[in-house]
Length: 344
Image (cartoon, rainbow, N blue to C red; front, side, top):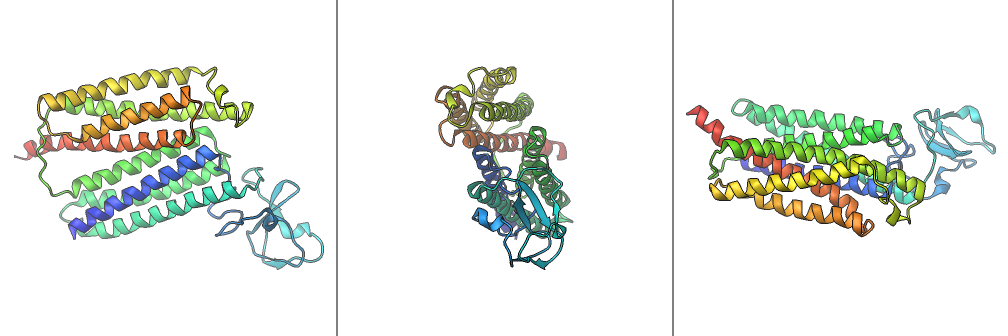
C-alpha cells in the first residue's frame, strides 16, 4: 500500500506540473481572459465554440447565471426564463467583476483546458489526502502535508479566480505561480517521506547550505522572470504581436538583474556539482540540475537573440518550475543523513 501511495503522489505531482504547463501556454497565447467568469466559462460548464452562442436570441431558453455579450458588455441572466421576441433588460444584470467582454474561441478553450487540468489535479490531491490517513499514526507528517496540499489547491483555485477578476493583474499572476511552486514542494516532501529506499548519500554541511542558497536564488529568478514577462506583455500591447524583434529592444532594469542572476545560478550549481563529485556525496540529481539549467539558459538566449521562437516562453517557465522541484529534492536528500545522525 505504501508503494502505491508513493506512485499516487508522483502521479499527482505530474498532474500539478501539467497545470503549470497549461498555465504557461495560457500566458503565451494571451488566453487568460478566455473565460471571463469563474468557475464557469461564460456561464457554461462546457464553454461555447461560436460567438453566436453568446448573442441574445429570441425564443431561446436561458438559465440563471448564463452569460451573453450585448453592446460590448457581459450580461448575466437573473433567473431561468424563455426569451420573447424582443430583448427585455429586466431579465439581465450587468457582470460587475470586470468590464472585459471579448470572445475568442481559441482563447476560451485553451483557458478551459487549463481549468479542467486544474480540477483533475485537485481531485488527485484529494484522493491522495484520503489515502494518506493510513499514515496518520506511523508517519503523521505525510497525512498533514497531504491535507495541506488539498487546502493549497483550494487556495490556488481562489487565486485563479482573483486573477480573472483582476483582468490578469501582474502581482496576482506572480502570486499564483509562487503558490504552484509551494504545492510542488509539499508534494515532493510527501514523496520524499514515503520513500523506503536507503540512498547512499553522505552529509556535507557546506553542500547543504549552498543547495538551499541555490534554491532561494532560483525562486528569486522565477519571480524576476515573471516581472520580465510583464514587461514583455506591455511591449506586446504597445508594439503588437508581430514586432517580436522590438519587444526587448529597450529592456528595463529588471531584465538586466534577471540576466545577471542567471550567472549566479550557473556558478552556484556548478560548484555544487563539483563538490558532489569531489567528496562522492551521492547527489546524482545534480546531473539533472545542470542539464535543466543548460536548456533554461538556451531558451532565455533564444528569446533575446532569436526574437522569441514559438514555444520558447512557456518552455522557459516550465523548465524553471521543474528545476525548482529537482533542487528542492536535492535539499531534502542533503538533509536526510543529518537527521539520521541526530536520531542515533
